[in-house]
Length: 158
Image (cartoon, one colour):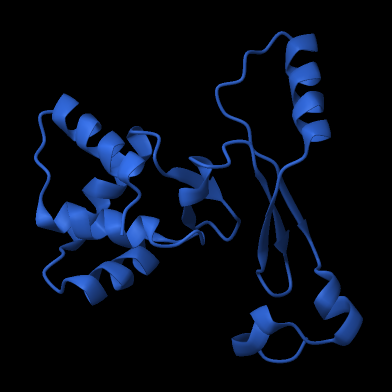
């Protein structure tokens, strides 16, 4: 189920572009916003096809581009030269990411001190930010402490 505010934004954006609301687009949007996890285009393809087997890859990629352009999804870099999409920027527009280099676990975080620091730095250096992102890579405590991590189940021992 898509949040009504998200659906209203999508409808308004599509109408402004002269595009129709189609069943395939609805399925892709439903799959994209039925989770708060980051996903790749392939992840979204699999989710969409579970809802409706007729969803085409071409429509998926066009819809992803439209959702990013509309500001409803954000493309993020979590490493490994793969585009990830984050559906959480609508509710939490100023969050950042911690990424475990061992198990690929991603933790979202926001911090008022970081936001203040970003503002101070950009103003001092004469920038007006259009987009901000902090990506911190490290090792998660669980793997370091116990030698095992739930997020690493399919990757074998550390």
